[in-house]
Length: 395
Image (cartoon, rainbow, N blue to C red):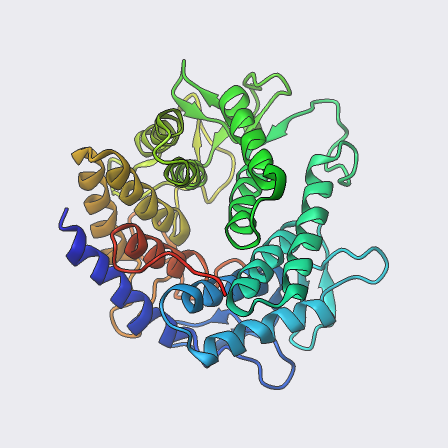
């Protein structure tokens, strides 16, 4: 791997292609906040606004602001999104956030999950890093505490099922881990509060979700960590597990190359690439069955943009941390497939969705789920880990 050249490639993609594709066109100068549902040429596909996308996009802009260059417009766009969320996207009945609103902030949908809150928390933390404004740190802590309470206080979240077949979920632990990492970075870690949350999530990953005997990272398990032999619980999400793997590797890096964490992160990536890579057409399958059986979700064999972004980051960081050439080879394989099938060579940026054979399922560049987040984060992260972009700094 030519780390210097590759790092510059990803930095160039981020700054000279991806950022200009999204901005300033998605900034809503009338209502505030950021649009994100775009057609291939950047025209508007829909004006509704996903609330957690507002936090994610603000965080991404502020990450660039804190590491690449303090461009005033990046701060302006991020502050517009944060103001929109705080003023228009919080349900006054319970202080929780909506999931989807109209362009003027009219609430359309609310979910039981608290992901809107956690992504707003990391954006406020990065804003504190950019400005030193004490209120931003307070808002970050406020939304972090709500996220933690909803997901980790037994009985707090509205149940999705009857509870007759209880399970534990990987996603909440992964997001808590990376959210705590972000707040620790910008707000410090008085008395090890955020590191304590990270340690708790790592312990759960090891004891519940990583199954050495079958080399699998489970998404849902019984409370004791055992595999539940039914459709939903047998379903693996390789891209999601790879994402968790690089979160763990990043923690290992923070702790000076912690060997146990490197081993855990690499296993998560290795097992998921083996299970998820489509040996016939290339690319990462969205879902697979832990025992190789059928998956009931009809989109299981599609190729979404974000697992490939996460795999680029995961293999890049694994190579940097271990020097193992297999990760350089995997990275090149994923890179080649992704830029061949997901890259729009005319307008720039990646499409969101391909069929199994790599042909476009549609030409959307943004949707309720895809925004200015996974792809720019991948380009930023790879450029950063390869030395082309420095770590974010704070005021």
